[in-house]
Length: 193
Image (cartoon, rainbow, N blue to C red; front, side):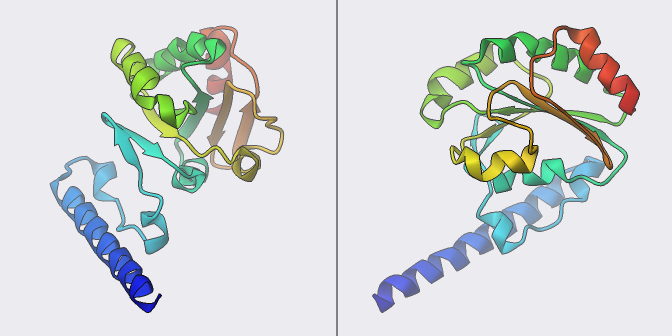
């Protein structure tokens, strides 16, 4: 028992050291202003570091993406929850892509959070992303303990998708249904910019 605990502790220390070193190297080799501001992750954050499918990060716990909902700056964040198996979700993806393109010179960030099932990431999500490459930031959340984190997104969310959170600073709006067209989405954004 003592040896198992000691080995586990040693493994955790090595894992943290390796992740910290990787993050330092990434910070040193990155040239974008946003990337230069990356802080070395705390030990708690390291346990939520994502794996990836292609270049799309996969988070196994909501805590990994939770900071996306807590930014305190002058950027407008548009965070959409979707999945490849959700027809209304896929139908509205072009609206978000068009917003991403139309507002790329402004402080607007579109983040598409895929809720595809972990067992189908390589068979469904990856082929979908290859067929329909998205320019907006895409992340995958495979945390299926929905009752533990849905209220952290919004207390009014019943669990169905598509769902979109749009916020800037203290202004926050929650949309629990599909946008009917690009203009409907853009009208919301124009009011918040």
